[in-house]
Length: 234
Image (tube, rainbow, N blue to C red; front, side, top):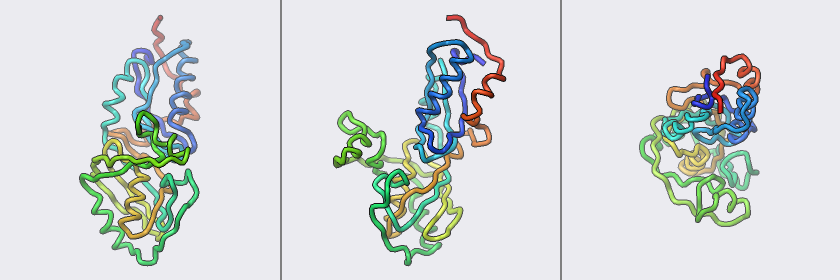
């Protein structure tokens, strides 16, 4: 392996870790192993701290491939709680409103999910990294400022209802770059004439990369010490 010439690593991001932490952790142990102070390392798609799953990390010259990986189709398993919303549409914030769910049936959920397949317009969450007048939306939202984000055109290839234990549902989603699954949860809640927020999220695939191909970042130090590594002289 030659990390300076460029390697592509697949990680299963742990719960509670930021995407930034995964990159920093990988960079630290690679630099330790190859005895270099600096190395270019980046990831090909953010996962929220409360999400787990596939994260692609590129090193050295392979960081030029980040954009290529970002455009790959992604698959998620999402757990959604119906009947309540939060400002961030996930568990990062407390519930801010509750809604009735007694009228919702499994058939109604299945029919509603079908309406999201294909091209959809989605308004990103205010608590997101989207830019608004040169500032991150989440910085403005955390200060209590009103954040107006424009809808983005996305493609949802597949939505499948995996479990229906009302008021909780579990779905599998295959979608394009830029899809916010917590915004999808919000929109599903509204379409069901209720509210909803995301309570669990696993990214199970990016392109052809699946969870079973991924390294555990916690065991990365041990893993890298066992690899044959080519060290390029400065």
